[in-house]
Image 1 (spheres, rainbow, N blue to C red):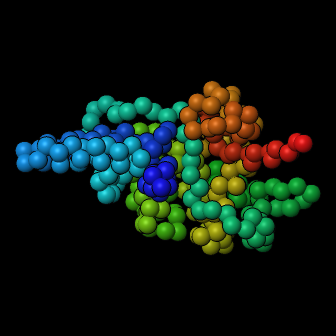
Image 2: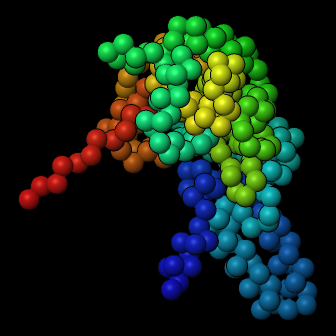
Image 3: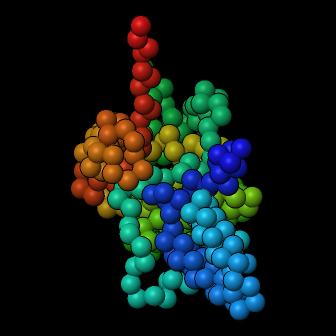
Length: 268
């Protein structure tokens, strides 16, 4: 029963390697203030408030509603980084791909993807995508995050926390992105829409389309097929499979696309 309650309370998007330290510190301070104020009246109640607050922060990342939208704005005024920076953090998907075959059919019909024995990205689409990414490359993190928020098909506020960009949407529809993935996503959605793909489908398509990237969206250097071990130092960070194949920048090691893990064959 207790374990079931803990699992329901847990929010992986804001804990572990994805924990936002500005959010955590802000909430700890607020819980401490609440406990101290209550302690003037009742010490047991203060202890209960403190213990409950710390437990919720540990499980959920924060206890004060809308913290992910508030804390980064407050800590932006601090002249130093708060909390550690995650090495090669994972990016969330903007939208899940429910039907890959239908998605491919739509992209082929729109002329975005070309089938010729193998699948290729249309040359005109590739050029437009590269040009749009070039334009975002010189933008600040806040400007890149805003560009993604403007491109996605759902209402979202854009925030920056350390080396991660956050799209804070309605109904806990929060999406964490690395800067290279955010640049590729913002540019890719707009290009796909210009080529006749509806925005909802475009947002679902930009994740698999990163397989066609030739250059890093952030630094512009060539991309190579690599493994998590080579890019991220084994299981460091949020990756549990150091052997996982990825598409990564040859210079900055940014992970741009994760190839599906091979299914293990059961042994007798």
